[in-house]
Image 1 (cartoon, rainbow, N blue to C red):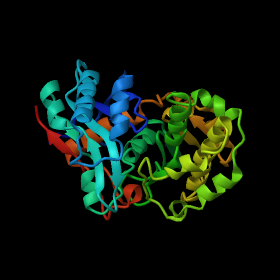
Image 2 (cartoon, rainbow, N blue to C red):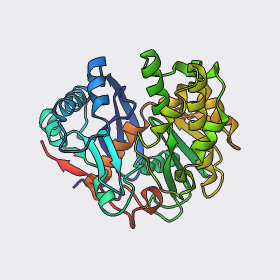
Image 3 (cartoon, one colour):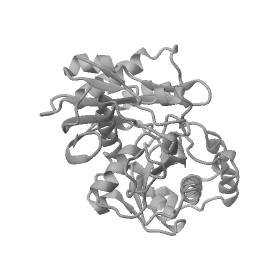
Amino acid sequence: MLTGDAVLVAGAMSGTSLDGVDVAVIESDGDRLLGIGETRFHPYDTAQRAVLRAALGKWPGADLARAAEIVETVHAQALSGLDGVTLAGFHGQTLAHDPRGRGTHQLGDGAVLAAVLGLPVVWDFRSADVRMGGEGAPLAPFYHFALARWLGAEAPLAVLNLGGVGNLTWIDPRQPAPEALGALLAFDTGPANAPINDLMQARHGLDRDEGGALAARGTADAGIVGDFLASSFFSRPPPKSLDRNEFSKLEEAVSGLADADAAATLTACAAAAVARGLDQCPMLPARVLVAGGGRHNRTLMAMIAAGCDCPVAPVESVGLDGDMLEAQAFAFLAVRVARGLPTSCPGTTGVAAPVGGGTISQP
């Protein structure tokens, strides 16, 4: 276990968008964010991405040796040679997430990374929360609370991450700690980039709708959006979480639409899901700060802003790097695990009581 002293720690995150590995270094004592350091991005190549895409949805027991090798090798490359870092947080690659059924599955062995890097590695962040009845996601909210304090926020605000799935953290920075009652409410809003990316891959062989350009030329199908919002997921009270493929029927729903209209419809679904999420917050936040790849989709951002009654802006508007918040979050959580502090609580995952997840592998 670490003491309460501040350390330099690296976090690594590979999201369901499968673009590559984000690495970020922060200084923290596990309670406070004390400094933001180096960042890196190590992309998966086309062949690696294809292997990982084929592994999505699979559970332990399937033949995942090649996919695991890719995850561990690319993470080791991305995390190597960081000056002064004494600890690493390794999220792994989420393949499947079913907290009320089979659990949660992040591919990659932290012990392999610890041996290669010569550093203690904290990993398997989600399993303990799921075992105790939590959703196992989202886990970034404790870091979002520290970020709100770092920014000097004095009123509730929200952090929206637009990855493959969207997730929202409502934060009251006036509370004494992230696990305090009323400090945090966090949950997945619904699909975000994943259906759009899958559409672009299937129809154009592209990774994304760059800037939302294709969606901007189309018209959203209001009927499909309405049917999407009728899902029981949106009426469930938070906390709640999603698997990347839980709304896979959206692909079928837009199959008969022209490319631009299909992209516009999937983008409108993602934006509508965010609006529904804000409706479930304790009070309207003073602002919504947006991280993740989706903030680069101008059409998606415009649709979200149009559906919100508060300012919406990328986190760069307050001097942060929206590509690196999740990597920073797992660095922060690694310090908390090493100090024996909670990493989730009833307001973030629905777990019965604050719980500290994570496994520590020594080199």
